[in-house]
Image (cartoon, rainbow, N blue to C red):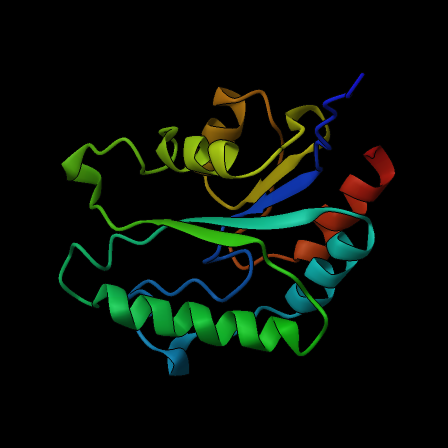
Length: 169
């Protein structure tokens, strides 16, 4: 008899701006404007060391606002991933919504579009996974899929959230 056992994984979903990097009122539009928050890299490394896989889910309306191209966003994400890799941090995937709030798309947080993609791409144990964000829409998304969540202050200390996860895992 062949047993079909799928390994479900623990994930932490991270918002990007204000959680990993400094959130700017005029948007992060280039690699030069992408600045890691203090402790963000160490916090992601700690999550990896605790056995969590990391997915970034981010609203990037800067694209459909015509301020930056999708290609430029990909360059920023490539830079971010390379910098994290230098510190032995692993990000499984980045999902982003390019739409403005007035476009009423299904992928802009707190809507479920990006989360549905992640759930179809990975074996995720929702009961053992978390979402960390700095906005109400992040927490609403987590609530919409019964995912534990932690809201940090905009440009706050991600390591504090990681410590909370460690205490409650």
